[in-house]
Image (cartoon, rainbow, N blue to C red):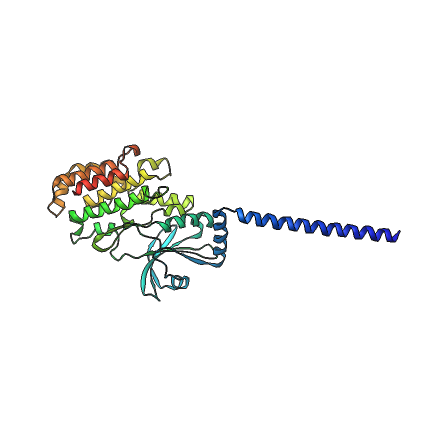
Length: 338
């Protein structure tokens, strides 16, 4: 009887061991088959998780020489602050070059998988009138740092307030206007899917040599959580850049970008910052082209000034469907300059 029990015990153990081997082999086969058929976006998600654990720097065109320790150890000074991040002007010691570092606060940004898909898109955008993303660092605790070139001539808002008369020159007003439009054209039409700027304003237009404009901060709202993106819109509203349709909705669009471009044209032509309290009468000023003509120093055909006024007014139409698209805007600007 005892021998029978021993035999039964041995058979049971052997069966359990055999079953364990079969299950293990099945899992291994399934894993191998899945890895062969896994789509690219799932593979990239796995790499992102690994990167997040280690803390690494992703480099794009123009940032090939960047290194994590250079970026993280760079001495810098704060040049801008918002509820969702801080801007630093930093000097990379090893190369003695100056860059702009944008620190995004972890609670204000989306999850790492969604963020990285947007970052790869923004890092691929290159145009002579757009500020490139050269690098993106993600730390082990969710820290996110964007690396951009530094433009020593400041931004368009500062240029418009300049007292030396440069902002009164028609040649510069026109050059800056068409440069911004070309950058916006690339964002809206030249990619597989339009990139909505979402926060276009004169402070986000940086100036290079000969006042060449570079549009910055495009697509930044895509990296933020909904509350942080909403706060960005509200900040823009205070500065006078909120289109009428965003009073009831928070969804930015190519039409909201066009409205803000029209506000920037107004700033360039009138030489003053937009003010949300002036909105009811603000754009009636566009009808006073002789005043604009007297303000502008360069000898210029008044008809050209009037046409740019009319274009700005059309961009700021209260109805989004009445605003011209960026292709039409670029065509009109070419006609004005010819």
